[in-house]
Image 1 (cartoon, helix red, strand yellow):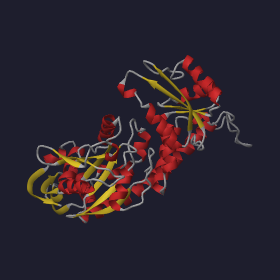
Image 2: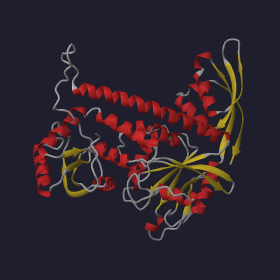
Image 3: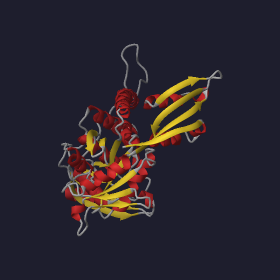
Image 4: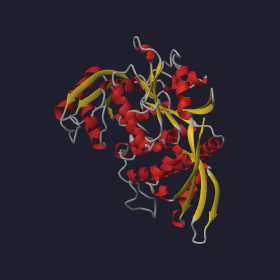
Length: 435
């Protein structure tokens, strides 16, 4: 139903260079994605164009070249390192006489293979259904119209319309189930806020070593492998520090041009990233594309409204570099900005924990606000965070409320309100630093 293919299939890869920087992809990354999906690359077609061709994406001559390579290698799938339109996929399949998949479908397939929990499987199915909704016409060409029985004859409903109706119903069902999961996560988060345990979330480009680092720090057995998207379902563990404890969260890795369907479907999972007190941005410092990958992760964090959360960069895989020892880099104010470690060899962990302790000492604010009746929805946000200390309603309907929350949470709320919440502030009663 979802263009899934079995492991071991042979694939022809297609990679096109475009002058537009935003349209460029990495051929090596495509090969890693194909390996992660369980397929075997038997040939690669490369080329360059100023812009995609409307009919074949690659032009008529290049399409025929791909078809010739498919025939010569006996390949049964063609995988493009780009996003294709449904029409382009159909036109290419007619020329190549085999299935044609784009980058988005390939990533969705890998996610489907990696999903372990019920929530993860629901999120993947939702993303697949959304992606498939534009490609429904491919599945049904043998039924033009369904006919009714005696007394029910008429043009009927086309098979395509039936499929779309069933698809919408399934999407609605999955969304309802994921909303329940989201509420459960929100309850867990409120419990963590009440316990004053800060949350530190591991983020980074896929295959940067997040799960290996997570396992080494927490003595866990989260699946870790040298492949893209080895981790899909988020895992949380309590980590004891010299001056207290934190909740450490391992999350799905990011990738350039992460499909929007996936970002939307994994909203609940990525909540751990959006509402963390500190982000550990794990970087593969031995990767030649380290700088570009770093920028791609920052772009995804901005899309998730998580770019304002304090970050500590963790340069991982130090063991692959020569003559580089574990160390902490500091800014002008003496705050740790980067730690050099090896998760595989467990080198530099004491420095990493030292840096986390220095940064996770969160500034707690005590604020008094006057919330107008028309802006009462902000009270709901404070209730969800469980930060209200006292409240009193005025005769005009305004509510005087005192809240105690972390500076990170306050800054996040101010940003989400586009500064409106800050205009309701009456007094900063005080602040303290909690480790």
